[in-house]
Length: 293
Length: 293
Image (tube, rainbow over all chains, first blue to last red; front, side, top):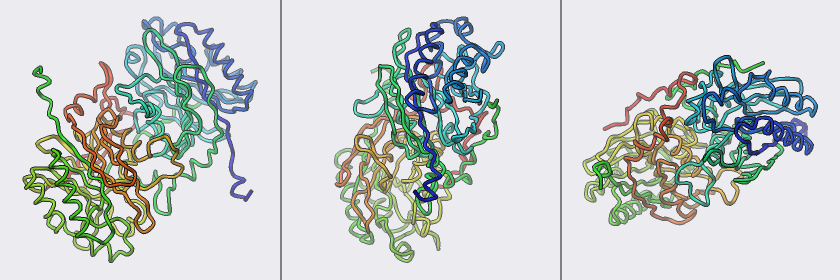
């Protein structure tokens, strides 16, 4: 091993694809903790859970959404995940319905072995989410951890290439994506689902690892896609896509150093530095970083 | 047919995948005209030729590049394509090495049945192109034609999501992509090549049709990918990908109305209006439109 190779720092990442039941919060939390224990036992150090994994997704009323939501990071779910993170020595990224006073957010929390790291609030709300949730107001914060820099996006956020750009331009090595992907129209057989394709394109075009943890099942008539996957900073899958219908842990060993090296494509080109900001401007708002604890 | 359906305006589009030979300009031009005649004879109204289709791609010296380049739209290749467009009643989009005084551009010209429509100069130069060409200075112009609005991007431009954004935000229905795609590292079998994947993602995330005409063959050691394809505004292929190694015409009938309707995803979401410009700003520079004739 050369001195250069010695700089590599492998990180075992796991996406915990699960099937939450709407409203069954205690059961969902218990199931998420069982998957966390299983993945940690198999050596994973960073665990990603789906969007709204403790509450389910398809709320029937605003009141139901409020009743299931909780403060971040001091609510019961965060306390339970945080305790597991501490005990198992892992970092957990989990999607949660956040209640902040009279406001609801479709949020994700990052909980490390030494305590809460930060939170993210979904910027791009999908469908009926807009009836309950406030749009995110934290930008795309990038969190420094001992294993590298990570950002978080939720579901429809990956439809917006600005999400990947903001993460990469702030130095993120890995984008964690708690998600509840739904089918897109006209999906052909023989091609990846569009959600998978969008994260592969975003990873490649920004030299960014992506770990996307989806849910499975059908909830109040809404089917979800599964197919959780972990993508390298070259855009290609390292693990997954997972099953379209079963709970499953998808894990891969990432060398996050590659995100920082791999943005240089050859002796001329670099995926971020080749942007023609003279023609189309910078991505603004990159300074917004209110998601820290 | 309802009154609404009557608004549909089908357009037959063909990508003319060919194999230019570097330096053999007369032969390349003749071959491109033969493919134009064949596609027009089969009913295509908009024909897209590859990047640098009259000169070849891998120039050995700056002098060779200058010698093969010509003025746009008054050089011999544009005159020949323009005459074909007039005679056949079609619109041709062709990649060309443009000489403008002492400057060289990796350009594309749009030639309609009534004369030149506009030109584009590649914004994002790949590899050794930077040794010969100036970076594009026309932004991402959008050209109005009787069949709809079209923009042009060349090869590495599609690595930049800003390209699709600028085209879509200026109202483009269709992005024409003359290209000379080269292999990317670590391509897995069983997945589309990254270039195909990037145009599918860009089309879907912007509600934009894409017609990408690639070259084939190996030139001075550089292999090219072929796999020309036409993608719907939902992101899925309508035709292609073409052969990885043979010349081939790929054609599809597009309903460009769909680009303007399809950006609304449901009763809440719209791929362009859902952008959180309060968080990350507009894409700037969209007003640059110097590519018209």
